[in-house]
Amino acid sequence: MGQHELLFQGAAWDFSTIQRTFAAIEDIAVNELGLDTYPNQIELISSEQMLDAYSSIGMPIFYNHWSFGKHFARDEKAYRKGYAGLAYEIVINSNPCISYIMEDNTMTMQALVMAHAAFGHNHFFKNNYLFKEWTDADGILDYLSFAKAYVARCEEKHGVPAVERILDAAHALMDQGVDRYSRRSRPRLADEKKRAEMRLAHRQETFNDLWRTLPQKKEAASLSDGEIDARRAALGLPEENLLYFIEKFSPRLKDWERELVRIVRNVAQYFYPQRQTKMMNEGCATYVHYRIMNRLYDRGQIGEGAILEFLSSHANVVFQPDFDDPRYSGINPYALGFEMMRDIERIVSAPTDEDRAVMPAIAGQGDVMGVLKNAWAEYRDDSFIAQYLSPHLMRKMRLFKLADRPDDPHYLVDSIHDERGYDGVRRALVRQYDPGFREPNIEVTDVDLSGDRRLVLTHRMSNGVPLSEDNAKASLNYIAELWGYAAHLNGIDADGTTRYHLEAGPTEAR
Image (cartoon, rainbow, N blue to C red):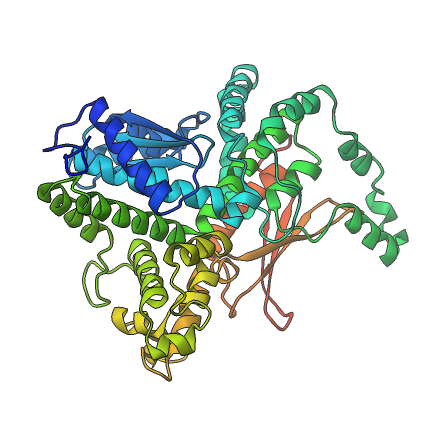
């Protein structure tokens, strides 16, 4: 095909059109942008299949659960009535990287989503340190196949209500079922099937020995502080990963129930890096598709109609409503991510004196893709903002910070996009994306080893903010259900004062 021959004309497409367009996109992504990706697998699906993927957390293979059917019915109703649209694509962090694109898309949109997902997201998945440390792209699809079959076997053997009882509780605790800071070895999901069979064949003696040797209640007075500390050390307390602790040490869970908890925990860990890199990941993919689509037009491979359709869609994706716009619901991660990538490109290529003073390491450096690829590999959302949010971009986006003091009747604007306010605005935005501030810090801190075996959790409050009482009680009920005994939650302020206390017990004897 000649350099100025169009890849496609109009909205219609066929498989040969998609194949040659993908080849042209790949040429730009690899040979001009220098992206490093997993092998790509492009699959075309219908709108109903897209809705089905929505309902199962975007995964192509997943075990059955009633909540997925509920989500499907809700999303399908909204889509059919025109209340909500569908994503143009879903991309899976796997090796090969699977991109699902809808058959209803125009050819321009097929090109856009291939550039966005198959190369932008794909490069980010493969190279960002969080995904490399915490996920197993090689093993996830095989593991999900195992999980689906395992849950089905459990339903057949133990009954659907018994399985759903465990999955309901584990799903409710997924946010507290991940390793955030500890460095346990990354799960090799490809080996999980073998380990599961071993766990089913041999009951883990650590559970039996631990609980068999516990002193009875009447012996509580004879336990010294040192003995209690030794028991806690044997349990690895404090422990941030609630599902891990329950899976390993619950006195009441059966082996098959432990495996269900483990499945949910592994899935939660797989998705955790995506929660920490939403803005960067979408910013990377949006920047990549913007560069590729414009380059296709510059090379004469797509026409004016296609580039105008692309620009219209792109503008909608990165649109950021003003704070007083009725459509405002926070900062659009696509908008902030794309603007930051473009701003880095500006600083590296044509810096101002301000840029040289604020970011001397990259200002005028010249290698745009080198700087961007390093940032995509080494940062997560909060650290990326702390390092690369420039005064220029804060002025462009007209960012400002509100002070929300509980004793004041009104909000106060205490930092704006000027010299005195840059640091305040940047710190506030960093905190908004920092999982340490965004997610509650809850740990398992004790088990009443010498008495009624109640599980004790501690919530270390940030800025004195307690958990929502209704949500906390509901979650505590699920914890008690999996633990098999009472669960207690203490809310501790920064000065060590207990601000609230909640209790829950299992709903039935097991």
